[in-house]
Image (cartoon, rainbow, N blue to C red; front, side, top):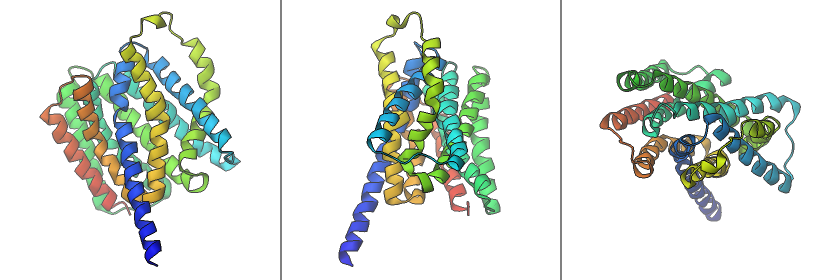
Length: 295
């Protein structure tokens, strides 16, 4: 009995560690994307990150001799691919042509909220009315900040980030539901493989004429989002969720905007205003409220 308790405790600790590593790796995604889109088109950046991660996923699935998804799992996988492999990467990359990564990171505070909303809609749950209160307040905080700070600079960038978060939330919710039968990291792997037949031809179509002019920083940003944001981060993240529990370890995602703002200030020398920090804290509190009253 004591041995079982110690084993469970060790498993929970490992889950928190793996989940934390996953969140830290995800946090560098937008700053790294900013480095890449400063020198390459958002479309090409999206294609490369998906193609490289997809080829890696294909190798891992083949080496692990993982079971193939069955027919009824293909549509959820398509939605995961649409949201996490294509939608969020492309729309956020397009948004970063108009916004700083620090500004765009504020919108990540809505990602757990979007995931929770899609989880409620897809799961047919009837949440407490307080859930919708926190949901509306959190959304108004982000939209209000975007209007007050970005409407004169780029409303297009703000709209693109909102759409990116919505699609990613849909992909996360579908992936979480599907992982119960297909497995955690296998979901993102099969979603990446599903996109490969599209991404590989597009790679040659959108290959830039002056690729030799891309700096080392641009390639580092590209490598990071392809290897860590699109694939390796998901391995740690889903492993952590499986070990420590989705509800508990999933709370670590609320730390992502803080890490992202710190990286934007450190790597890109972008200004992180008190308004950004304040809105991020407010959204995190609202997301915590929606999680509490989701069921």
